[in-house]
Amino acid sequence: MRLGAGDVPNAGTASVFDALKRDAQAKAEAADEAARKAGALRAVANRLNAEAGRDTRFLRGVESIKENLLAQVKYAEGQLAAAKDPAAQQRAEAALATARKRVEDVEARIASIMAQPKVEAAEKARLEANEADDARKAAVEAAALAKRKLMPMSVFISRETKRIYVRQGFEPVFDMPVTIRDADKPLGTTLFTAMAHEGSEVRWTALSMYVKGMEPNTRTPSPQHARRMSIKSPEATPTDPEEAKAVLDRIEIPEEARAKISEVVPPGSSLIVSDEGIHKETAGPGGGTDFIILMSGEPQGGIIVRPKARDNWGDDDDDDRPRRRRRSYDSGWW
Image (cartoon, rainbow, N blue to C red; front, side, top):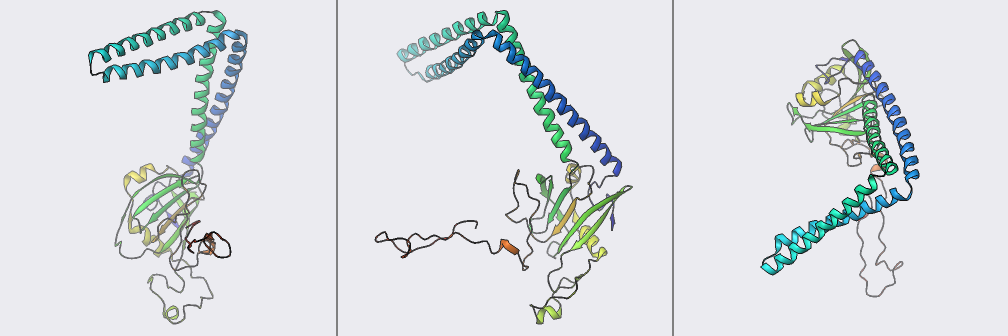
């Protein structure tokens, strides 16, 4: 089936996807160049630091002392603000003056060390290397983001929560409310998969997950299902394209969501519309999962039969401690 930009948010075109590819390639090259530059500057900084030797090590130690003295100044300022009588105020003022004088002495010492040519050169190189490393990190992050835009996008719309969820590269991008017409009526579960760009449209396949023994269009139990729940249909029920599009027609996606979704939908992207919510095994950021959805009343595979850890504390055979009441409690996954 073919769905244009009016059916799926910002479906995009092949030319936009090609532009994103070029952008990702350029940012990857920029990240490599930033890494090369940062490595070269760090090598120079290490060499100059070694040449400055003892003085640069002494400088690091004096800078650490300065940090401690600044903390003392802050503490003395707090004591002065909390002083309630003249004597306490006088003591706090004296302590603050002493702390500030020590900071001034240390700063003068730092300035004298920095005035030495080798130390000055080493410190300048260190700062340049740090700046280059910050630029490298920013370039790597930008390259990773550009690469992620090329990955298939996953969009999930839940009638249960009335929200749209977007993931790309297995990472959450955003979620927000949507409006569903006739929200009290089931939507079923339909998976749309982007196959290829065709001009301003994207060719999609649609797969509706009909509840076992239910007929398309009606979403009500068939007579056969009502009489014999255990008998399965020998043939899979084909997805009705018009019914699949009708599901989308009932959903109003906010313009803000459309704007936040990437300007292109790469092939392999998916849109899931379901009555269900996101299952709790869907991982958060860094978890490496796509959307996990379980259909109510359907087989749930290994998730439903996960073994629970058994607590043997208090069991007669496993615990011989006296006067322990036999008890158990749930633990583990659930």
